[in-house]
Length: 167
Image 1 (tube, rainbow, N blue to C red):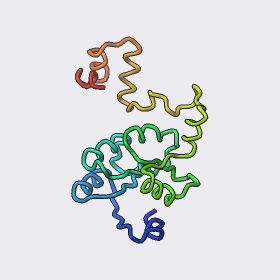
Image 2 (cartoon, rainbow, N blue to C red; image 1 turned 120 degrees about the vertical axis):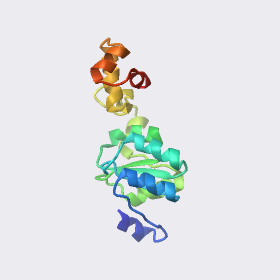
Image 3 (cartoon, helix red, strand yellow; image 1 turned 90 degrees about the horizontal axis):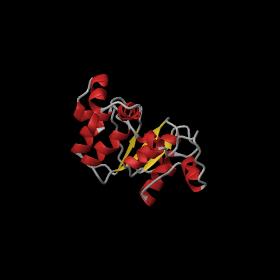
């Protein structure tokens, strides 16, 4: 990815991080115009990464570059990412980066097609509110739906009642 970007945009200064904690450390030390984040990097907190980056560097553009399907894009875009690109997509990284710098965003074609054509159906997980929940939030949600109370859930999951309430 870096070689492709350097070849197309020699003016870019490209930096690397091996883990998400290293990303956070680097953005506290200097300003970046664009972060290309791989969701599979060690220490990844998925959608929460976007919120953490926004707290430290609110104006940095963020492109999620991952092997996760486009159906996952909604939660990252809702969290504040500027774009989402599947590694196996026919779209080139250059097109996504150029779009983010010129338009401020890059959305996957598959997602746009579904939104424009209202192609939502119960078997399609794109844009379902439950997909936006973390694993723990979904676990608490399902226990609430099953009729468990906050105290009962906190005992079952061995977490504080305040944590259950927050989720």
